[in-house]
Image: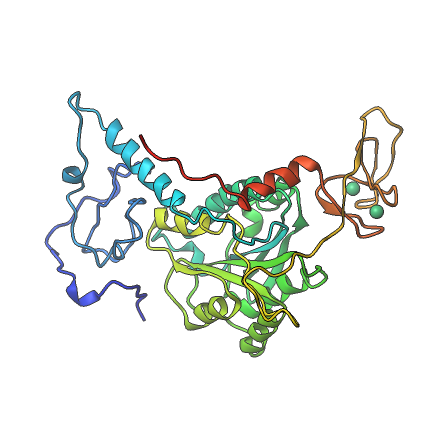
Length: 380
Ligand SMILES: [Zn+2]
Ligand SMILES: [Zn+2]
């Protein structure tokens, strides 16, 4: 079944005699904005800013991109490019500026589809390479915006879920886990159920104040599961695990259900730029749905829960070497838990001995801007 969004297939007029030459003029820098090769079912559009309103590449009308881009007097395209960038920025500013209750202590498992469907070349160079590239950018941006967050990575290939990166609060660890491309070579069929169960089990111990999120980058149109995936879905909904899916091929009913029932977001990427947009929409922390409280009746502003945090003291590099509790490695630098004096390598983390959440104050301060966003500027 072809993927559908709001656009109506029937209204689209095809000018099938128009065919652009292939890839000669694609340089990946947005020059080919809006170009569509209607005779080909492939997505080749680099258009990014208009991704929201336009149809799939293969449904779209032929666009004369050179007529939509305006040169200034000196023949430069700088002005048009800047306008496109400004449009993207404005869209972000339209987000509500009022205070919303958000989860700032996030736990996310990134599920990467490593099935053979990822070798398709409808996104350049391949879906797999593009996914890896965007995943790296996503990880950097995600940790920048969510300094108290932790992320793990699970791959799905050959019918099983594969743990690629352990849950970690250090972006370098996460990036290192997906740095070796040859270790993640796509093969076989994906299994949504196996991978989700694996992701869920790695977050099962988390306390209630932190979010549990799963983000699936899914390129396949099939899943081969050992049991009933709807049981997994119910379990996720019960444990308040939020599942979001960015599909690269088409919408699948089960993917849509996973997102709808757990409060996540679902999107089908129409082209490379849209894929990135969909992914980066998931960087800011999700708004917390107001849950009915026992006795509270589900008011709009539920009473805040207090949680304990510790600010560690940092050991200088010159201190005598000792074992850390997280990796049992002998090293001199590290942080001391203020409650039990155990030594950990990195913050933010949970103390392995007493379970206290250890953060540094700059991390905490940086998380606050989501809760109290800056008012949009008024252009003058
Ligand atoms: Zn350690
Ligand atoms: Zn401790």
